[in-house]
Length: 566
Image 1 (tube, rainbow, N blue to C red):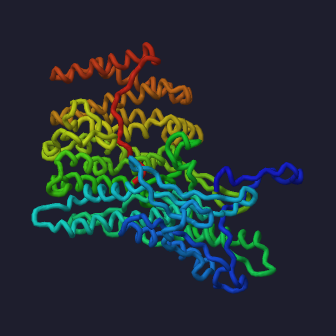
Image 2: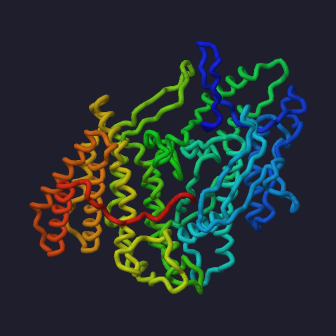
Image 3: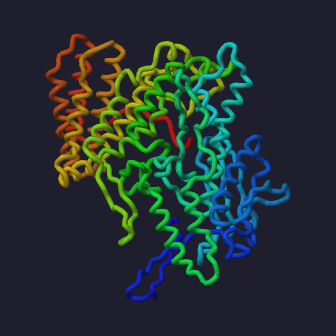
């Protein structure tokens, strides 16, 4: 996998392609290739950094060893092994495949890289780099989910429960990065196929029991997945003498297709510059769960309501600064952020395959109008003031940060100086949803899909619903204040879309039409309160300012705390 695996042969026959790709793989051969199961001539051995502390070191070993299940499925007996690197061995030594534990100033991505023969893509050395702060972030997430430090609760029992949650993630992370060094790419459809691969990015599958208590057990899967086994069987099978390896791999691929396992690659799942077309496949997202992204978003929002309802000083250990409650609150409050992105793929969405002519796969199918309406409804529910409001009980617990504790990017932004700002926190969650609803690539796809099928919604159809949904009847003052903030953010996102030079002309036209409708509504609306009238004037003037000179328009300054990696 990867562009650097491509080979160009300009002397190939005129009726054959110039470009071909080599699979990245370690050299692995059976002692007896004719046997269904055989020892390897030389097994693949990975060596774990002896500097990794316990119990992390054991978790790294256990997770990496899951790959032996895949090699057993390919017919190897102990073909994949994991050991602790001897103290006197340099981890950079090309003879050793290494899982290295490193320290960084912030939590960052882990990497599975390799040294390869450029002529054949044979892997000479696999090298995994795992950041030490990842396990601490997982521990923090668990603290926010269950707030375990209550009166009368055993601190030791709480720590054990949190540690097991975090270590379960580290086992999976170890397996994931080792998978890359075996030559296996991400598969972001695996979570939609029952967690079929360690090569997806897993979101903790946290549930509620019958009594409404939060359950962490099973949050992360254990063992190698069915997709991983198929990948190893295809890439590492040692075929019997007299058997065509090419024909054998074609047969393996047909079996994999028949199994129903799906595959969505990096460039079709990620949000941002790496995405060549924007996420569109409802099964291909990062940090999501379940086969139905909309149903999972609704489930996760219900779970989030329970988590935030339980949130209290019990989320931090006795003796810790109360200010660090915010550190724990951020991932709990934004726990739905990734599933929002997954649900958004349904809007203008298409299921597709990387079909080859004659292999029987369906190339593309549009998501139904009913499913798209359900996705929009679920996403708009995340913008409801009730979903964005933090209780006074929680807000009053978080004081300004004491000296020496510092302010990091991991915290919510503030308009209130050093005092915790619940309105800004709500704004970050709203921005996550609005950014997905008003993505210019998604908008263009919605317009395109309606041209092909008039029964499917256009971007203008969606905007009409969004605008009407954001001007409800007046309610509780705090809810109204949040609603007004969301209205401003909506205007800013539409203004940004209108000014986006890469957006399709019709998409920019739709954004302009929406802004003019909002401006007209704001100009004719008379509120009973001074604040309400001021807000409407601000909305109208803000839109007018942008329309007069889009180049000088400045949006809001709410920065969403970083999410990935978790």
